[in-house]
Image (cartoon, rainbow, N blue to C red; front, top):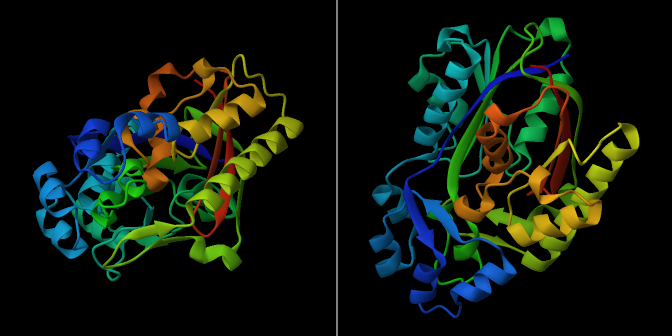
Length: 328
């Protein structure tokens, strides 16, 4: 049985509000963004003056002017997760990382972060962009418990605003930067016990969401949104049919794509707003970091016996779910 012992996050401190995007004069306004996407602010590693003057027309320049890299964010999130778990970097026996905006393809993002943290264990990327939380947990659950090291550190980190064309009124309104980390063990009990997990991908639709290495993010927005809502509802319904969930007590966390999409899902499953944890409203879509970052932010509010349902979707196209129970 897998347990999560500690979690951590890191986000840049620069924020972009809807009025800033409206002032770019790209065919959008603050009211439209709030009504259609439900995001009021998003955080970025880019200087606001750089966005204002260049609209990030050359993402290669963005890498040079950014305040932080995906590696920087991942390292800080990991340090917080390790501290909450009460372990040291040298205790980590495996490090796996998801990053859809790396500066280099080799060495891997996991190796770069391991070097910064002083981790000498096996470090490699296990990557699927937005559903990374489900992928990492499901990946580890497929190991024999005895084959896993004592502690596994998982990280999802992304600096997606460095790949945004700020002449595009939709993409500029969606993305934020951030990282989340979580420490997993099959040998030590933690605050969260993993009861169930799934991960599935449909590679025939891989071109629906693309992040260019030296270019921009682009997607088939309407098709991806519709798919995401339907697939998330299916994931939640499948867990409802399998386990005795009670939405007056239990918690739902979805992929932090946008708030209006999440509200469609919670309305469909009759999940009250108080039991829907999210961070997209003020952080933006942080790719694979959004859902675990939301859980990490509520770490001190977890209630013994509570179930936490995570359902996440994204590039690949891929999707997955996790069901956790709060132990202590």
